[in-house]
Image (cartoon, rainbow, N blue to C red; front, side):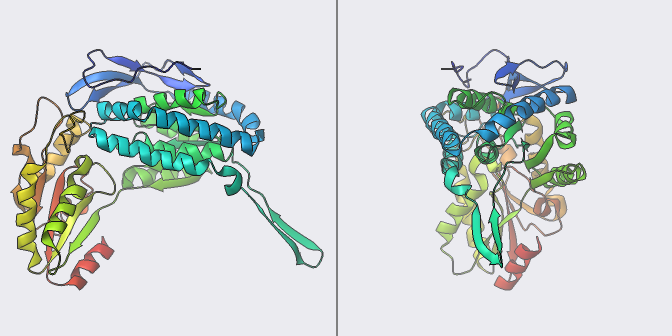
Length: 418
């Protein structure tokens, strides 16, 4: 049984080194490049993650390539048994994984637990791979002709994942990939990389052969190495829209299958006959949960007719009740942002809102926040107009905008045109 390292906690004082996972073992980076990893609640660096060079990415790919033939030939029942064991171990260690997420991302512990639970759902689904991979057979599709289909793995595939769900989004990718018989190379976010290494150890303990799952940390250099590597057959990506376009264009130009998921600007329409209290509760939860750092966050509320004034007042009244604090504090409802740079970027939307004709109802920059972490209290901006940065950009922070329209038809048009 592989001995698992104790996950980092929010009180950690030392700066740990976070290296790659290649061929079933930790491999220290040799590029001489690294990036800082922070505990966002403390505003302090707790780790340094090695950045892979193209040569180091190639080592991960070659390890996956070497492991692929035997893994492909492994029976579906054996693959399923390993996946069941992976599911069991992730479930057993779910709180340890959640603590890692909170310590490096900052989300409150209950959100981190929910993230792991969502990832587990994908693993559980993949446990049924013997049924899911069944082909089809049609006898006498034409005279003397039978038609059949079989499903075959692609080979080495890769995932490039975002900082906001450092456990769940990789699970979306690697679980189906390895279940189908592929070997996998993960390039996780360099901002919160430890969950990927902890997961790698669990997969090894579950009996996944060495080399089937590999982790190469890094920045754009590593991303480009993945996108351009001739031995990688397919790439899956989740991140911002500009980077998603770049990933898709680069991957397909290099003859790869590619799934590239970008950002979103989610709207919530509130009609005049709505239950305002219920709508305000939903807006606060969906807008400020996980500090707005999730692609399903509601960042724009479209208030129709006379609902606007009452709704703005109701949301404003609820904002002071949102407890901002360290994610490991059970009373906290919203944690910090991922980095100080991101906090400043989010705050700039609030600062620039009046110049764009909007009204800052609640300024989170002046809110009560603890300590030296990367905290930003919830902000509420009214009269946000389409075409302004506060409306058009995916802010990815605790900033909720209100757009006022006169009719339901106008509201639907805004949503459809966004």
